[in-house]
View 1 (cartoon, rainbow, N blue to C red):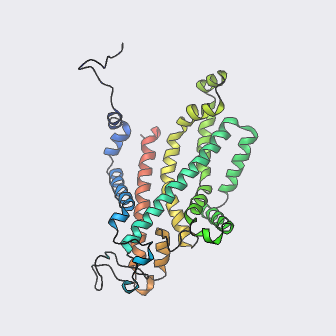
View 2: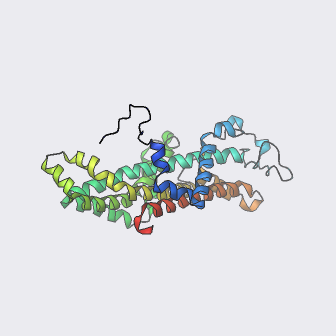
View 3: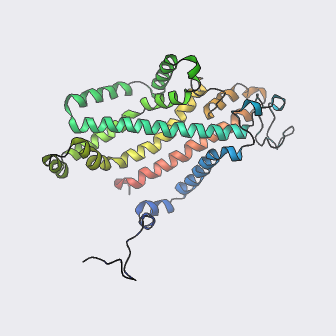
Length: 316
């Protein structure tokens, strides 16, 4: 029996918003205070970073807007503080609130881009290894084993250093963000590859995949339309958790001096600069970027943990 939706009063199919509000994920989200608070905080952090040019008192990347006479001003609520430098200034006269907002935007973009690239590499390698097996699987998985045998930060440092040396000196500062994205991605793709490979091995032996093979469906179509959708749930959880790790890795590389340059500071660069003046009394130069970095990583991890619990039927 079919429903004639053209007649007045006929039942209408639910919209996407209605289906989402009726799902288990939405119910779990609205009944989890920690997930809701984390989502609100993350939304505020992202929105303030995206609209930093409209919110920030100055552009910290524009040297013409920096005033050395205003260097190392304390926060506005302390003696010597001045408006509009709400969180004070650094040693170059850069407004700390502006630097944090712009730095957060860089950290988020690098984190998202590195997760996306590592997802692309890992899922491609996992699908190919799990579907075709044999020598291809052995080669890809051994490369993954070699990658896992080294610490993530060491791989990122190695890749970042090698790529920087290959670039002309005039492009090293311009391409700093691209180098960081590549370095973080090449150190994080193995987890996705192993997860997707395991799921692909399970799915390739099921009847619908065997039927598609008998019908001479191309392998790329089977992988893209039949197997890939069934591997997305665990990969989505891993990507959410690794987003926070990618931001931390970028901050670590920048803190070590091989990340974003001082002229385009990320949160890690701001922490590295502020750490040099920690014991000189200018505590605000390092404290506020640290708070922002910790807040960002904590709320992402809280959402990742919630997503892992709600998408895993064994934990319900």
